[in-house]
Image (cartoon, rainbow, N blue to C red):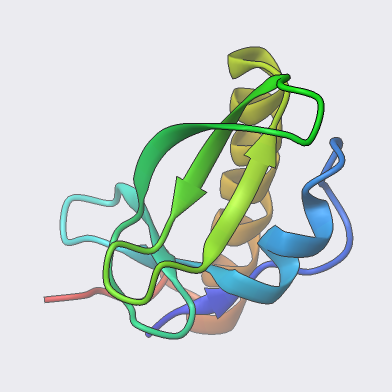
Length: 104
């Protein structure tokens, strides 16, 4: 089962994309796996260029191509995904009462 990320906990400009398109799943070993909320597949990471040529870090759904997140730096990406994982883990624990749902 996947949980969508809520409005709390994100800290960069792509928070709206993450809220709309990123979910998390809990693997058997307890690791949080990020997945596209539409296709339920793990994302791929890439680079892109904005209008003025600035490079950005992208997270994309490899199946449908939707942009799941966009960041100006690896640090901003890591901070936001870390916040996503924290919220996901707390929600998974509260929903199941025993450590979250298992995918598998």
